[in-house]
Length: 485
Length: 128
Image (cartoon, rainbow over all chains, first blue to last red; front, side, top):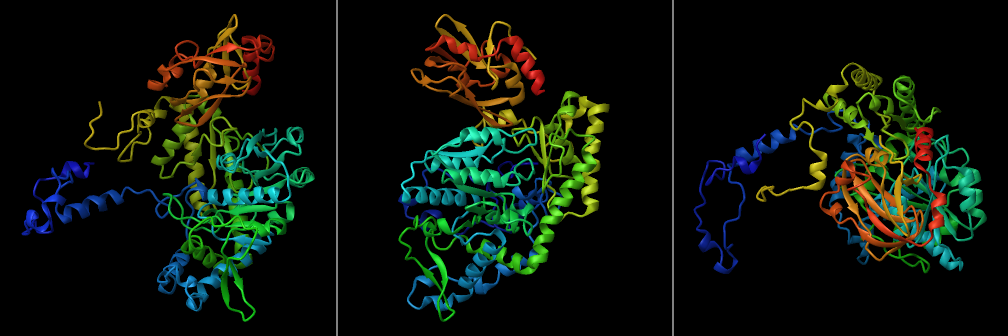
């Protein structure tokens, strides 16, 4: 389809092709006028509306299609939570109100939301206190590791290293480095979890802590977690729980009960707040008692008379990490979601997420290579190495799925598995949808046998078929006016 | 997949060509194929010191970003500047035009920690 610049017709404007009757030279002082015309496209209002409405029809979204990318990227956000977040009683609050003298009486409801959400999240995770301030999961990680550093500093510990598994999300080593630590990567064993023997070799007094996603990126729960926590705690290290996959164990297992001292919660993954496009996020960080003094300010407290207030007087705090009180609108959606589902409902979320992933695993395991053939949690990792040998790589399978009406799953991550395809169906998909996806995956395998030479032809049904990814990475040109050489 | 007989290899799929007390370093044909089309190479600076199996450079492909580790310790004499303009050279010619750095070696005995072509071939088969 044409770009809006290509549709431009000089002189077109307004809704009746009307010309402005105000002389530009009169309206603006000469020194404010451009030396040359601004190269914006010229179109009527209706043409612009049509252009963008037609573009929007090409959107591939969770509201139209199944996204086996799962909670990492796109999970269904119940409309109820959106309705709650749009209540004017919340949207029209001014963030400075609690700072004004007697202003907090106008925001008791909002403060109660933050206070109760902290209480509920503590109950679900086994943490003693939680800050709602971090603005995203990665921000939460840094907040957590800064508290870890404050703890070691207060105790006079001389620490240099943070241990991460090789299956870790990239943010873990990045966080450790930003916080001033060096990382030690521990390889996975044949079962797809952290190699305990290799871990033992790396434990020294200089280990500040360990960051672990559990279940990990292979979708596998580490049943040695108690032994790992014991080894780290023996050198006064801190156990950091990366909450990326908390949605798999919600209501079944609490990080605080299995040896973790600090953790973040990705509200979009576990409590279905909106995500994608880098919009506002929330990454609440929970701590057990030993790290509580270092929590960032402000914190929401309940006074003796039952009223809520913000408190800033914590002498050991790591300080301010965000403006105001975190992304309140996102936290409010998480609050509504928890309130809507209750304890039983939240347990059903993790149960269904795990059941759906295992169903896909069992249906496809004879067809796609399964590097870790054991019960998975909320996601399953296959390898397309057999299909790749026949000429159809993980990328080709991903592109093929688009024509079948499915968003591609994550490919080539985790890095620990060759030709990896990571599938996370999430809890909200019906059996019929999941069955249709399984059939499409089977059809991709069939094609790798019958006509692998067609592998590069997909997708064929989309407005843009297969972009040249190498060219896009090497000579990206985003300006219409800058002609490519 | 090609494995050059006269080179030594690491488990991280780098190769080294030792010539007296100097050496040329690159990544293997297997490595470039696994990475896919390489879009960017972050090179060290000439004069930098590197340790055996320490970080040397990093490559980005359409699939992933990966570190490249130095097969041996030493000082960097020269980096392959051509990779800045066309990182795809590594895909086309991993053992020749796609070399990454030249090193002045500090400990020739370190070569005993590396694999011969035959050992590397067996290593690739075992990790298949």
